[in-house]
Image (tube, rainbow, N blue to C red; front, side, top):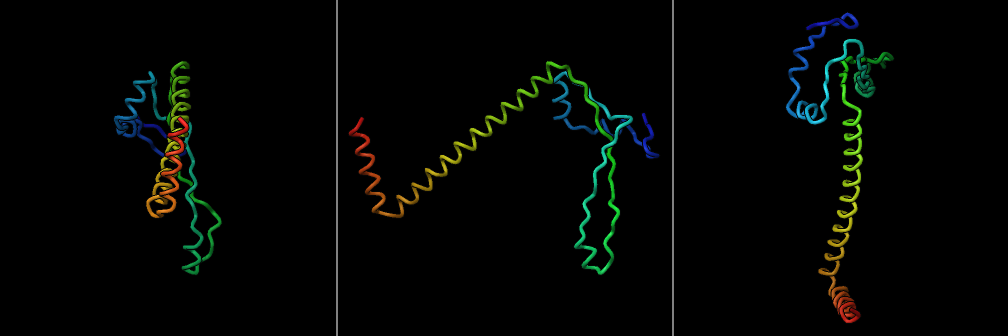
Length: 136
């Protein structure tokens, strides 16, 4: 199935059949359907690197190239969309906790390096641990 948008010919089948397995798994797990939009396009500005023109001694271009790409329409049941949002929120919390524990481990390793490289600190650490054991 082909269609025109802004005088550009798009082939729906050739672009959608190249979707990889992860997208298909996502659509199956969330009971969703997706397809290329026939009407909406995503316009992405191509960054202008002014330094390249200045090196060549040319004038700075004041127009900016725009790349257009068809958008994807996805239809997903409302309760499955809520599940998706909750899952993303949960992943965010897990990632925050992972970063917190990573910082703790890094601090412990840094302290361990200081103790190993300095005998006075190592002796003070052993005394501290002994006092903690006595206090229990």
